Length: 224
Picture (cartoon, rainbow, N blue to C red):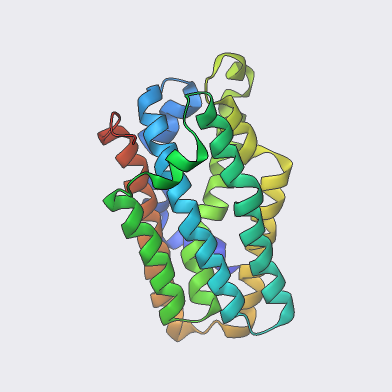
């Protein structure tokens, strides 16, 4: 079994708590309160800045030029695509890029991003990839799931643009490429002895993702 599928199967409760979270369910139905989504989006913008740094760490941790290029592609995808999506959505609410960048980080944002960076700094490229995987591949699976469940109802959904971004071919291709990259790294560096550590990293990252969704529901009026 490929590493990502094995991790997801062995951390099924944490994975389900993340991908089937109430925030995700309400977003897909278009029932999520706007202030909850706004709060999430501001924090996700700050999260992505740190996530770009984690990908950049991947360049340093990469043993080959091919790995370095994959890490660089991740940095570029965040800086050139995902951050701009957040700015696009927030512009409609009168928020500027500078306001997003100067917003204070919530505890959940700091906990998740620092965990990913620490996993990468303390380990090797495979440890970093496993810490990144729930976000990168998880958002692709969530986007595809929401489109499948609610695709015929998207015309009236205020979060249609978000669903379209993560269910779209560009992001789906990016996630598949990351999954293939993770599995190819595992073929070289994976051992039975290190699997428990990788599973622990993966499960913790899933739990932190669920905490991130919950943050949006718990603090809907604390945006800036």
